[in-house]
Length: 257
Image: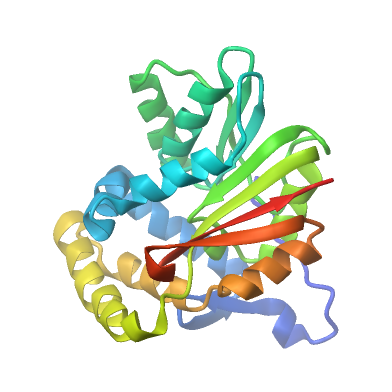
């Protein structure tokens, strides 16, 4: 379900434009462009994550799982779940009495995730949906997670508000996302992001442009404190974050009471 939203601002130019990497594009264009990126890279998404991060993304996701509080019987919503690696681990923790949903707005990514889950003997409920308009009841999930997906959403505030809405009281929201690296390392990180990553993308997937966009999207995403404030405005409480790999990635955790 991909629903375009109309900003209520009186400034039409602000209502209609947003970031796509370093470009300014019409809001309705962004969803199409992001869909094109992930449709292009879906089949080799996990391989590229391993190559780009040196396998570190698996440790970041393991840390996220450890902070989730998910246990036997938990209901979990994994948003922008892509290839299903987080959903798979959540399902193992939630057990047969739990309920773990894998969702993504991109059909190609969702199909890859479904097939990977099948390969591990898991049949989970799956939904193709827009994080800004979640098709789930309020106060339902014990845990909601989004890993490396929030920065690609057009209206991040709306998406965070929806995540807060579907959490049950006592529930926890986990946002794992690229963030701001420790400043002394920023020069080296920029060189790696804009020179090495697009080159790897070209060699492995034949798509240099998509990986250049992914590097750009990190730079326009809110940094740690800004994202914490966004989560608080969405109604989350006791929001804290953990810097991983010197701030290359941050895990934000918020609670609904």
